[in-house]
Image 1: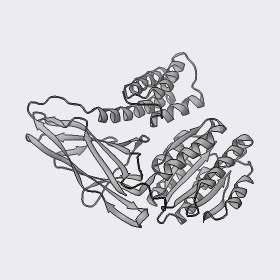
Image 2: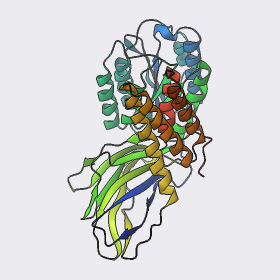
Image 3: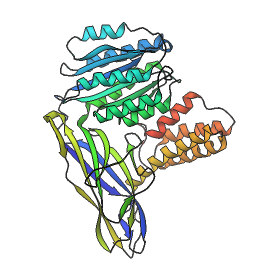
Length: 418
């Protein structure tokens, strides 16, 4: 299994007469080569809320969804289950799948009671997941239906960052309408995972299944993007790097001792690219073909027990000319629009929190138009409905807010480029 690395500029031409030119660089990264070798074990931790608000159909559906995942794991895979109300405990310690019926019995005996302490569940979940992380694909599914009323939200983020340093991927699932989308988004973003919304209990099985299927396609782990900028080239000052697919995430950048910039990507999937958008400024350059950056990926290959591998170091070139004519790259433009959709929606939410309903509605309409430009009709519909409700003087329901957040971060399955 190797890294597939593709580079493109939004416009490879640069005007030699300009002292500074802004460009967007798209970096697409995936695992490629032979088919996924399922001898690479999965290491899955389920972190499940069983507080009193989960009583009835909600918890029963989640337990059934968890048991279906147990049936999909192989004897070489590992599983742990952590449950939390206002406390947390390890229900199933990290172990190989040797006695499915016993594991499922433990899950099915779970009862709903108490409050909610997400941070404690996350802490124990990371501890269990870390026990089986060697030569595995290690991911957690954290599901909750409530606020972290008995916990500390800042502590949640610190635990998520700790998980990232251990090369553990965190996926979060908000159940119902009363969970804190900001907290779950921060956890998933820090853990390079996915934020999911389970509006109705019946969706739990399909959403767990979707995340599990994605986990099965992981071929390489602990991927890090290494970016070297040529002299006279610099990053934009504010939020210069973001992932735009499969989910939009603002990515932190760390410098290495050799001057390269490092961005954590996490797990690499086969047939599922991670697409990163880099915003750079290019100073005045002499005419001709000029290298402006080099890009490389550092990664681990759990199938062959290899760590710290490197992809080829690829250059990206600009063509500097005094007869410059714009030639925009439509694929890169789609990535630019995806990030714009996300940021416009975030700005709308900020305006709404400040009491500026008209400003929020305007930004949601702008985001809806952006979604249409990139062919994301489903997101455009959700964003426009929310904008229309605000313009009509209505309050946005919790469901409206959460749908808006989800569609701002990803392109739904039925969207296609136009």
